[in-house]
Image (cartoon, rainbow, N blue to C red):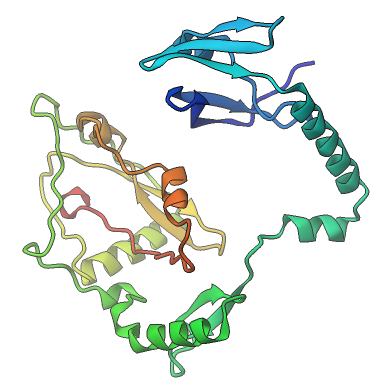
Amino acid sequence: MKVQPVGSVSLPVTVGAYPQQVTKEVNFLVVDCSSSYNALIGRPTLNSWKAVTSAYHLSVKFSTEQGVGQVHEDQLAARECYLAMLAMDEQFQAMSIEEKRVVAEPAEVLEDVSLDETNPERCTRIGADLEGKIKEDLVQFLRKNTDVCAWTHEDMPGLDPSVITHCLNVCPSSKPVRQKKRVFASERDDAIRDEVQKLITAKFIREVYYPDWLANVVMVKKANGKWRMCVDFTDLNKACPKDSYPLPRINQLVDSTAGHRLLSFTNAFFRIQPNKDE
């Protein structure tokens, strides 16, 4: 039976007991099918660990800087996990459609909170399960600092370069690329014109002549039916060297929230570099 992967994910995997342990970044293929295993380690990963496996002894040994590490299989624990998975699968299959929908819903429920009585569009969402005192203080804090939030482009009339300036690290040997102008349908043309006018009014971008680099815009349909304007910076990205210290991975960001009572998500406006707009 052939199984088509639905995607891939790269995860750090640590095996062994401290200090005889090794950590490697492993690429997993994600498949949608029933299995007795949560994950399968292939030969490329075992080779990168320099691991020696023994099916008879149900163990794996590998070399580390602190000596030889070893991992033993626990058949009893594996059998218990397998039986628990079968029980959960049977219970889920017996559920009705409404019950399955409840299970699929997120654990945290959010509620809308109006921050400006004169403008109902200025609202945000907070956790509905917050304690009374914490929820009240959080709402009062947000309402007190509504002037800090930018609700439209007009609320952000440009930033002084003395405050912050982003520079592109383009390789000097790279040749500038001017992408061929794309033709859009009338609906997308209107959306592009409106979005560009908003950015010009807010002084996010400015009109330039004879640009060295020229990138087309890409229009993406949003869930609410409106258009989101992006920029095709493929050629420009190829000319910029890769960052040796990228942003933290999402699993590190999630782990860093452990032990904290509140977690805040900020939705920021996207920006376009001033010299990349046609």
